[in-house]
Image 1: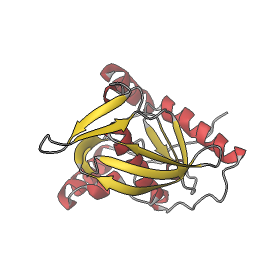
Image 2: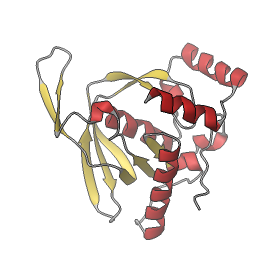
Image 3: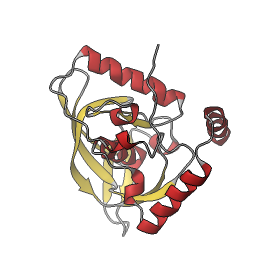
Length: 202
């Protein structure tokens, strides 16, 4: 039975920095599968090992059910002047990535982000539009992923977690303080309320 639990802010363990994995083993792959299970159960699209109190550089992601990731085999994107077309191949998901690292960024986009460690709270965050990520897959092979859209946002968000960073760290001091105060004052809704709200929005 999957006994993983997602840590919630302001748990200090969310600020730990994850350690690299020397070699991908069946035990680490199973942890990734367990993380996917809990991520799906909580209606999330990404989860980092730090969030389930495992201090290793491992993340899982699956944005394939979201509308902006279901456009076709290739997504057409344009720069701010509408001049340069970018062709970003659609990535097969779900992803279980070990030692993920952003090696290149392009452009920027502002996207409303949520987080399983901040259930029911959202904020607009500025991120790179396109990211090129290096990681190890489940077979201990080095792979490279270049993506945009929600998957790009998700990967950046989860890699931040592995470095002890949270999405509120990208907000202005005023917005961050306001969100922290709301959480302190209102706390988090119970799991059934979150699930009900998520189902209604789909």
